[in-house]
Amino acid sequence: MAADDLIPVEGVITEVFPGGAFLVETEAGTQVHAHLSGKLRRFRIRVVLGDKVTVEVSPYDLSKGRITYRHK
Image 1 (tube, rainbow, N blue to C red):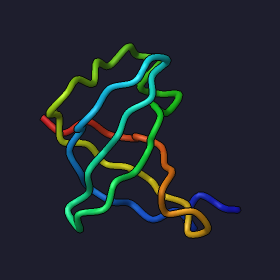
Image 2 (spheres, rainbow, N blue to C red; image 1 turned 90 degrees about the vertical axis):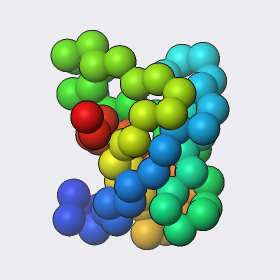
Image 3 (cartoon, helix red, strand yellow; image 1 turned 120 degrees about the horizontal axis):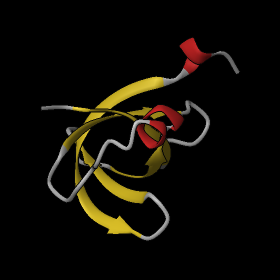
Image 4 (cartoon, rainbow, N blue to C red; image 1 turned 90 degrees about the horizontal axis):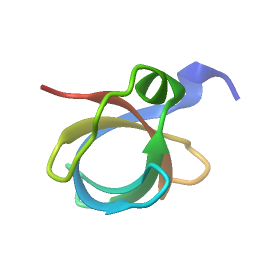
């Protein structure tokens, strides 16, 4: 699957799990179980409860995704 196949969705962090996993509630009201992308881990960008983030979701499974951006 190419990178342009992913669906970008904005949402808010509602729950934090160990190991860099998060539960994100999207603007549409759905919940996505997401993990941090490599760039966020590499540059040690902190993502905490209540942050607005952009999640890339696969078109095959809309309940799992990857956090790619933390909004300011």
